[in-house]
Image (cartoon, rainbow, N blue to C red; front, side):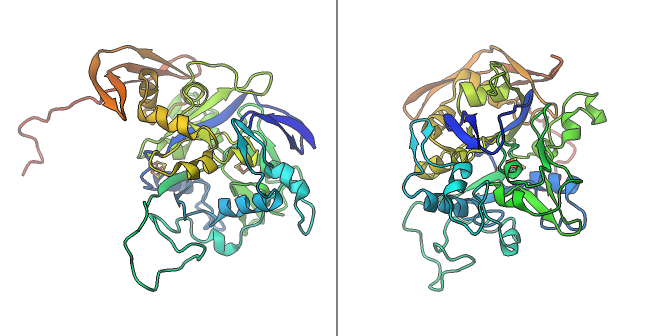
Length: 412
Ligand code: SF4
Ligand code: SF4
């Protein structure tokens, strides 16, 4: 195994391949405080890429209700348990450093039927059946799938909560799927870090499905090969005529009704980390404001999907899911600074990929206190630019106020 640096766990780690990095990396931020589980993203993806025979159970984008939902069912709980069994009591963070075992390190210690390069498992057909199982479910009988309480409904005796977790392939820096493939059929594009399956080389062994901790490669029984999210790469390449050759966000991002999604292509430096790009919106949210966090960073794949955690969910659960940055992220989000509030306005305002933003200061609108902290709202204007520096969006912090005329056509 090679030694590679994973900034999300703040240390070097073992990985089956030597360190290589793309020039830019496909990355996204989802604001989980805003997802309404309308599944528009899910269907935008399905109607574009997975509507054919053999793809009936294939949902490259899915939105599951946590804590009980999952597609495939139990995907995270199963892997967390396997890691715990391999390293009992040792899966811990020490500050920003993860001191436990990643899926690559744990694989070497795991006593399985055959040696693995990546610790993982193959979900059953039953687990893939219901992409939306336990939707809107805040209570379940622990450990009993598909069960209902025979004694009838009881009022909850503890605080109930749930949230919607929207997921696509994370186009990981150190993909578990790629590491697990015995045919080297999975590759990461040097220009944008998108992870793809070479359909000619793949033989459908499903090792990538076993090795992806997020279970985002899927088997197509009609062709007997694997398929996965392709990050709508023709759109990223600017091949959609609508954009005049400029990069465009993916279908799932663009259609998001809740306006929770922002996608970008971040610059990668010579050392493999994100190159400083102060006014890139994704760079700002992840590296400067630190409001957006990776999903299960302890798995070790350095996923490139980032989440603003939901503020009402118990912190212990969120820390297990998003790592040690949760308190800072939520506190920053709840009382946003001027710049953060302006950048948050860029979510879903344009179909173009934004490469840089600029803020023009506006007047003070009001002052208040949020959770005992002072907060001032300014009506700033935020401008987004594409890769050529052309303005693609201009919007304000305050929503425009429209007054309807007294008489309008559909009055009754
Ligand atoms: S999320 Fe899974 S399928 Fe996507 S790149 Fe990472 S390991 Fe591979
Ligand atoms: S379209 Fe947006 S709001 Fe609707 S489910 Fe998907 S991520 Fe959530």
